[in-house]
Image (cartoon, helix red, strand yellow):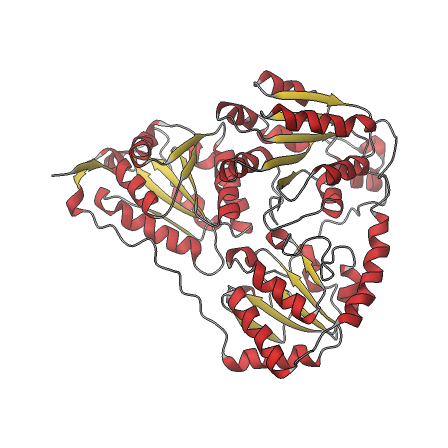
Length: 547
């Protein structure tokens, strides 16, 4: 007889699902899972906060395309993880959170850290459930992961009580489902594809806008071929960034408002008409819209569309491209694309300001341009902040997919260090750099301790203007400096914090010091932090609009 405890069954199921690493913070309710992971060769990365553990699992899923797994203890362990789960939910990231629970035999009697975790998690997950029989643990993990990957991906939660994990069972009585079954994705009807071909063939000023669902279909290559064959202008946000290199003639970043105002056909690929696209209000009222996505419920949300194409985004774009070749051979939109290129160049010139500024404290755009010269196509950049990250997103080049990461539409601060830890684990041969706002660093900056313990040479650059500037800026504009409260910070030496945790730290106060300090940080080959004294962004660089 082969007798195994519930924690070993968790690990066996995760291993069968292709899980290589779990992110966690220890607790007595989940110890058997660690024991099982040791037996199954799954790496255990213990973080300093459960929120950070889920953020790291989120980043792992985004970067690798495989499930990210966080294991947290009961009660405060689960509640501490909520913000990370909510961020993954808005970002459509397939994260499995396994939460501990008091013994099932004592359910409802008030055991240590007992609470209704499933009710807490249900509104911010695609699926939330609990397993109360040890033999059924693999079955429930497979169900959870299937929900995580169906349609648009998203986080799921599985609660496993303490006694269910500790109980030993005969492995012969355990059903291990198949974990390699592809999630079926319906495709659009032939008539719908033909309609899409006809609409694009008739258009004069089409624009393609791509969002994060491109990543979950691994449709980068298909999207690049689609816009290249037809010479279409492409704008991207979220995880679609990097689909085209910055020197591609089809890549556009700054001319979106003008393009949306003048287009006669907007093709939205794997994105949403949310606040990032001003709920569709920027698009010309007379423009037709084709929306391509994995998930039918997002089609036409906030902005009516003329055609929805639902299914695997890569397969849809490839079929559409071939349809255009057959029905409109040689059709290209070069003249329109070139007209937008002139607008792009004009708008890009605005972001050249501050490039060579000699101000002290340092102009934040000088810092951004120095970072742009420092990073290369093997650098993963993570933005964790407000104003400084918004500015950097206009300046820093993104050479390939997954080279830029940010929280996504939830706008959650504190993702920087956890994302970086996961990125360095997933790609140990690449450089990983976090651009922090000084406010954002305070959330999970102690995860540099995690990076030190696991020997992960993540690099952090803190733009330190001693303020929550994204809030303070409009606060002053609306109310005046005298009523700007709760938004000032101290010029804290975050570099010394990282030094104290065992990393490399350096204070940078003059613009000419930035590049040499970046080189020293990279050469240190251990977790590092540059604390850069900056001034706030000048008025007018970013708007104060939030909705």
